[in-house]
Image 1 (cartoon, rainbow, N blue to C red):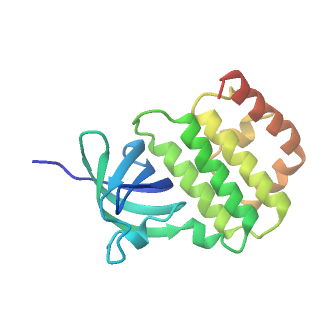
Image 2 (tube, rainbow, N blue to C red):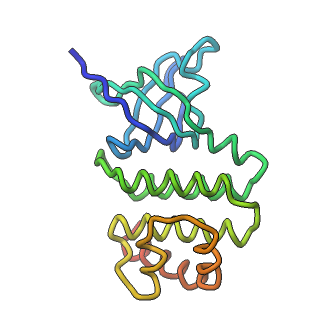
Length: 196
């Protein structure tokens, strides 16, 4: 008998598969980054269809298949894409973050702290007033924290106050804004050195 695993998951991307199916790239709290297939999800009467938008947070039920996980259930918790539809800069930021995860994470590996970091960052982005400086500061801080958590950015006195904290608030964004150009250089250098 198959065991069902239930986890919170962010839909990174999806692509059509077969006549009515889709393959989803999911960043799961319990499993890390996985590929999951949902049969019949593109049918108009599919129960899963409305829950699995790209850049959405869901509670998913999965069963391990031969080549992919199979998605057997999903309940939508938050649709970031919908939240950002009137804020293109926020949508671009969310897309950049989840695409970076896809580049950095290989294979299934549970990383609850990384998942919580990304989810809390996207939640804060959704509530953030739409000012370009704030959004860029948040993206910089979130990417820096992801890289630090995965070991791509080492401890440094100028970086640690932004990379090691778990908190999200406007005070952090105000403090990070003047340092954004330097931190972007650090981020790009760490990505270059890791050949990503």
